[in-house]
Image 1: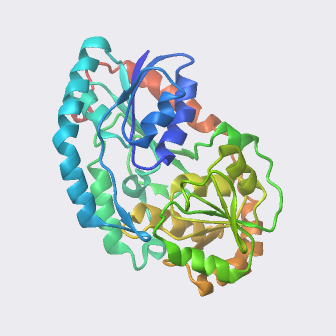
Image 2 (image 1 turned 180 degrees about the vertical axis):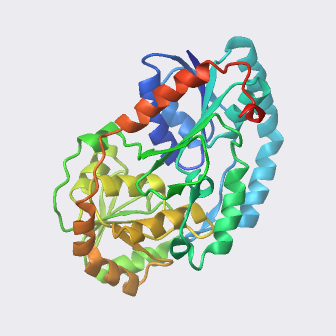
Image 3 (image 1 turned 30 degrees about the vertical axis):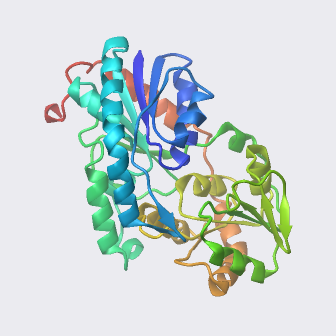
Length: 363
């Protein structure tokens, strides 16, 4: 089977999760990948037929999205980006005729599929916002943000053949052709052995978020910090803060032996912390409700805590809650990535039969 796989390039979580799915697919199928941003370099090192396209990006300040700067940056990028995408579109038409498209919240591959009446299988965590029912107690105080975000997610990949939604929480599904499956985990995480420790693992890529570092320093607790100082070549200590250069092996080792995790609301780290049964304090990026929703469910399940900002009170409350969170996490388990990959294989077989005829109006 020929598969076109689209990966959104904003953030690296989509790329690391797509890597797992792609490693499974390339064993049996002919796969071409379209991807933008830093994710392109990550996937190009691991797979053949990786095509670079232009995609939207987000600008940050502190721990919030800079909406105006994000708009200007994307308008500027579109001037050169769209012609690049059009060129890539026609190259794929001439050289590769896919049977099915898989999209990880990526629009180029979706539009390619719609223009050629190809079925699209959505594989991501974002569609949970639109395709599931969320109880009022979860959304309390966030109703407006939820409705705005839901309207945006709803316009992304409408009328797909099937939606496989990866998740560690399970709200009621409200739309057909939707299946909830456990989180996609890197093989390195699946192989890691969780052990008790005393340090906190801190993942913070917002280099302008200095307030977070100040609060962590005040705590006096050993904190191993990744992402904040991007140009580090070796460990750098500042009191109880150990700033570390990024190393996948080092990061996973610090994660599996941590007492707890402090990070944003990004799904990848949160799902890995849950799998390794590490309580997490989630401080979502302002202006990204998807991260807020992840954190709200994390707290609802007592797997961690949600905070709007990280201050001494929020950090203290989290540390006090760690023992209870550890108990709650003991009840979580999943069989690696088997559920997702089995479901994907089944949907691919079904979708292949619809090649050249699929349209959402035929549902």
